Length: 454
Image 1 (cartoon, rainbow, N blue to C red):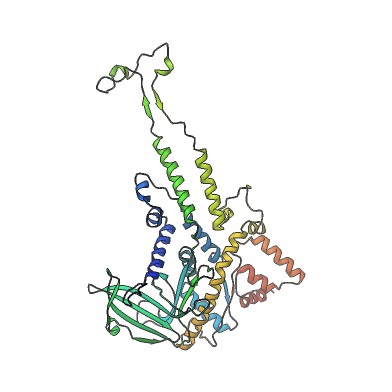
Image 2 (cartoon, rainbow, N blue to C red; image 1 turned 90 degrees about the horizontal axis):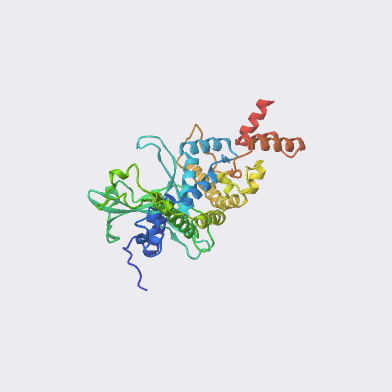
């Protein structure tokens, strides 16, 4: 096999990944007809071009459920040093941290990958504004890591971001390489149609330095896979193995909808004598007409209707929905749907009904937990290295935070309070810990509340 030219960008393997991102995005946004036209069976568009294609967007629903499970409940980040806690809280508030995490899970669920970046600069689009540590989500479609194949987990040797932009009628490729302590910038003239680099340009003419020092001995790029199966670096989409079910559900609903629509405007049958030779209605026939007394039932005007029997179609739709819930590990109870009727009697009962969905959420949490601890610690390292003050506090010694994720299920406050009171009475839980857990606040703030109560 002939090697690809080093001037080709992106490489063939990366093109496949980027095309897959585009396909998965279309599924999420409910553009299933366009998605299956890309990856569906042959002659898909010819088969459906005369039908009104109906989409049941289970894909988008599934991603929103998982984002709600991961980041819909309050998450508590805690460090030991009070100055660090103040700095971290301000950093997270300034960067709309939780909102970005929620949005990232919507992308991570469908694409299988999400990417974060830290940098130092002004939050406002004003170069004279005060610099701070900025946390931002970056699309994985511009991420091209150089992987260490000798490492069992394929950890990147360097993190490369690359994207195209147009300036003065020309197309350029910006390559940003992150290594511990440094960021390298390269800009190339780029032929978009051929997908090839033409020549290297002087980065200073575009307002960049060839090399930036970060003062932190680690990369500022953080990749979070949705879930891995041990076979490689990239994560796996939540939609994997479900596309045939999406297709089958849309197909059955589309066909049923079009059948019902076709028979919603029946034809009127009239006896002879109502229409003249030109096919027009005789005026005399508008109010009355003769009926054959010997066989009157077959001579009155009536609509020809189809006695539809779609029980099998609706049963298939129900089974497809059941299989989607089963194989996506999304419990119908998350939608307020329950085959046994009624609602869960308590938070504990609801959690039993959501066991598989909670397990799926916990798999995702593993990867986010690892990444977020690294991100917070690295942000503190940047804050200390660049002497950045947030909310009147400066980082003393960077720390890795502890994270209380909760369980992802909306709390039954009455049940939680009763359980906490029982544990306090039994001496297995302090009042401060109970308040921190019930109110979703830090241990220090909980101790202040205990003092206020006393």
